[in-house]
Image 1 (tube, rainbow, N blue to C red):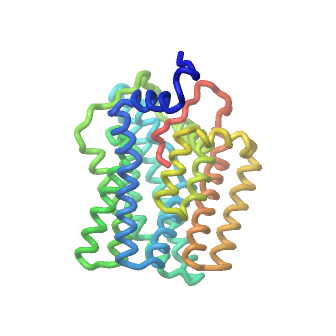
Image 2: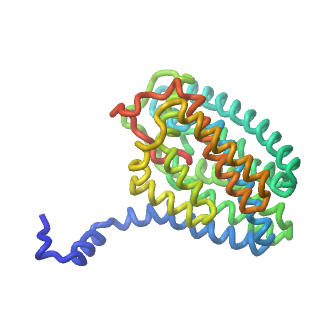
Image 3: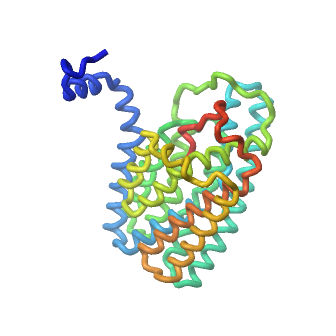
Length: 337
């Protein structure tokens, strides 16, 4: 055991740094910091191509799309992964059922986006309304990814950010302007799915595979549980949205250090609390959008709409939420957020 008097703090810090394995540093870099650099390069290109105001409107459209996805989210990926080593019939049933659920989610998303486009047009946000369907082009790729065990990879964000930058560069070279930048966000989901799906890798086999057929109760349970435990992290991430990719990494750093778990006990633990939170944040989003309408205000409105969607998703699946103190329940750290 180190002696504080004989080992000064700098020596202990040096020893701690030397104990970090190079593979771990590489893993963290590929998972967090390289995507950050690629995202910064992407937004630098977007601002240089279409200007600051339209870049902010494009960000508002992407955040609005995430709000829709948080509201309709169904966590099928975890169920697929836990059956990766199960008998073929079990894997096939789980994949088909997960895909059926995700197609239902896709249909709901399409209807919500059409409604939002009309609402944005009605309040004078025509540019955000035009961006929204373009950035939503990648939604069908999620149906495939969330029902395919071979897309389980911690480097999805790397493929996502790299694909977006490559597509934006192609659009910039072709002189397509704002349309190309929005399409880069839409088609990046397809590029990332293809890269993760077909990139050679060793399969990750679960230690205790599930052999029971997949049902909606399991999906609802996983969705409500992960949504409840990630709500603090998502609230932090939404609050830091105005700082762009740096705010995103700050939120993920806090999650990695488990800071959100310290705030989690102070969040509502009753259904009424989540309903109230969803209504209050949705009301705040509508107020901001109607009161100001400025590009930055639209980002704030979209951020509040995200929190409303995440809270409403938990409220709708409340009946499937297990006891929060159950020691057998583990959060999947690779859960899409």
